[in-house]
Image (cartoon, rainbow, N blue to C red):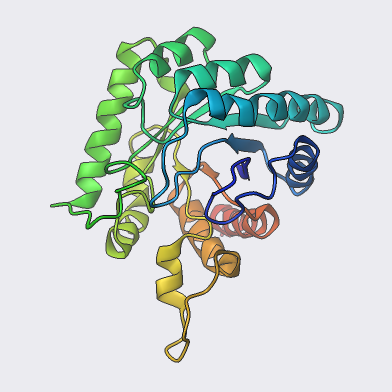
Length: 273
């Protein structure tokens, strides 16, 4: 899953792809690199970000999704588009314009209509764990047992989605790395990815360029932490880990290196000795 943020303020690529032509060109570039899904988002969820109302999200994403779908159909018809939103109105418009996957970082808690919409259209629905809201989620998050609590939450939200009519085989889960977690929480979740895979739901992992990895890899004598685009190697390490654990999809900014990491790891994992 390749990230295509059409926002002015996303943490790594904000402001780069707000123009339709630029966004479509980037989407085609990501598809050429081997992306299976292009995840389009019109609201930043970086730590400290503020909410964007549905009408503005629609203004940012709808025409880009329609143009990108047309362009993909000509060259990469197998590549799907997902809409990264917590608002049903935004999701409905995206589905009508060419999206075929819903990626909801609130797991249906922001808008109770999201589950009904997913059921109506029969599309995959990704449910992510987040503590709090982006504006405050990194304000000293605490857990008694982060792995158990995130698993319980995602199972509960998956049950709620099914009760609302979403088919079980359309539900994906995402542990929400970096969303209301400390560095240690993120590492504990990454060490337990096999437990998320064991739920039977396909797992999405999103670690791309995230700040907690910068704290790990910063040299002792460095005066500043790495910039997000300097964390590609760190991201690939988590892709290797996730592949070994059975994670089904990786949400990344940098498709080529992560795809290579996943494919080589899978080939080694699956070899018959």
